[in-house]
Length: 161
Image (cartoon, rainbow, N blue to C red; front, side, top):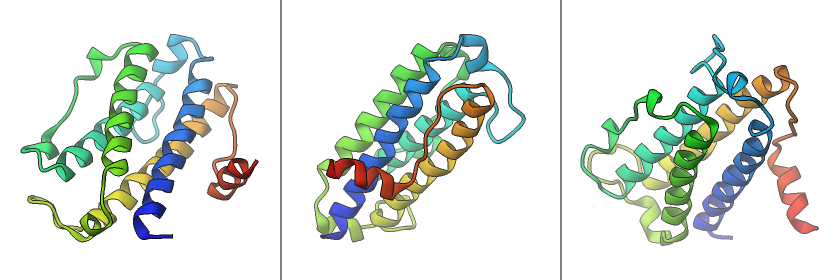
């Protein structure tokens, strides 16, 4: 399996598990979704917005878009689960599309304004997703929402049927 296929698999895993996170998030009321949590980025809303913003920054940077690193959103523009979900899905779609259309040779390229080759940035994006999913799953557990293991091997086993 080529390096690009490994990265594409990690992105598939990352966003498939976020789909499961969102299923759990949608069982909560708006107050629980917006409830402050003193850890990391705060509420589930803030955590999920953070992941979507950071994924968007990285993908825009990889595409060579100017000022990608300064992309941000105003959290007050996303007061509800549905609003955050829509923005999150836009970010996920852009990231998956970018990775799906990459060519193996592009992985070694360093884009203008970035200091790392694309393969390192893409691995970081997937790893960043795992880090925040763990935080989000803990918060969901504390709110008595459904949670699940996020082990990569379990995801791979589930794909084998």
